[in-house]
Length: 552
View 1 (tube, one colour):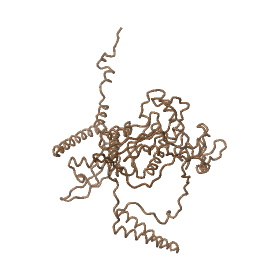
View 2 (cartoon, rainbow, N blue to C red; view 1 turned 30 degrees about the vertical axis):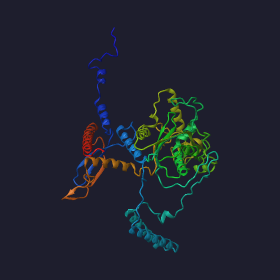
View 3 (cartoon, rainbow, N blue to C red; view 1 turned 180 degrees about the vertical axis):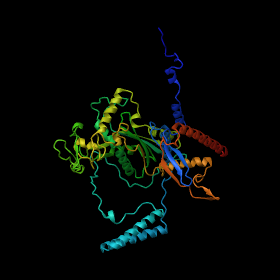
View 4 (cartoon, helix red, strand yellow; view 1 turned 45 degrees about the horizontal axis):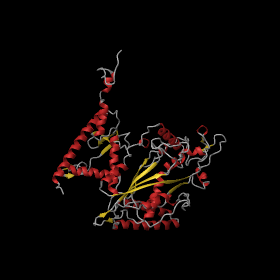
């Protein structure tokens, strides 16, 4: 009898021996990920309209999740870290004061004012020919004002501008009786935190790392699964997850009014082990922990929607679309369901009130310290992962909890246009055919998002004074400066010693099966080689700069 042991080597030439050898395709993909090369590039064909020469260019796909493209996701994460770092400990205001308008711009605005005055006078006198001429002149002036470099647009005149806007439904803004009161101060325009002077005269300007969580829905184990799934409040957990972004917006509004200055923040939303969303924020400046807890306890978000406590139509007996009425009707009586506006008229109390939990964690952070770098990494650690993979599901209890929570999210209405309203006997706003409960295509209902279908990165408007495109441009400018490359070197050709016009190009999408497109493996190897050479050039340039720059 022949026996084998795990340590025994497979027979040379056998299938097992062949499977143990490394795969060239997998090794090439791993090498591309190691050097930061996109593994699923977008193909573009660039045609020089002057010479007719074509070139196929690989552009990074720009994915933000590792399961799609790990190099692009890591690049996006580093960009967010740069954005967080530049705005967290600023000592000056990020947005400058706008320039005063020029005399020419003021003259155009004055002329437009006269045109609007004369247009209204002509309209009152029913001089319609003059009204049309003045409206045409106002339109030309608006284009000239924008071309002069001014931002924004003035209110249009004539046409649809005279129509009354749709009446907006207004709810009472009176605070709930069960919510504590907050101080309300005039919000100063400053966005920079306070400074503190130590006994030795050293000036500190700390900032804050803040964590906000939702309320409890039942006791949970260390793995995040509920102790008793039968009593765990999955319905409230699903509603809180869907409306968590609105609750966060309300928190920052309340904090600014209570603190008296324009607090700025950079935050990331991620799931806890119990799968409920929570948010980490890098907040510029400091606010007392007592005020942060008071604002969190007093913040709430009311959802004024029709009630969902009664399921009126199951999946097997769902309302049907009536083409003649262009409405959904009862499958038996053929009576139309109440419209969204009619259902809102019957709403007397909010269907849900979202609140924060009691846990509010805040700690002070000084800029340029290892603690600040560590917290920036902690803040962005889950940005490259989908929500359902942030925490590994290793037990049956965790998997059952995830499936139960997702099942509740599938039928939780996410907006007035959500198809899930049919389940509760209400027509969605702007109803259309082929809508059915449990099949809304919004991201909040997907298993990979678990209710967090909106933006996972929350950045206030005056955080760094820059957009992501500005931060990318800063990185490119830094690399060009290190390498000694001019920004205009590759863009403007030189003709007879003088700068000429850039060559015109035509761009179009290319296909993998086009005859001028090399195989993906060839393109990856070419990109890997180019990336290795670029990094070598950048390291050599940085070494030369360190040798020239004196220490201290």
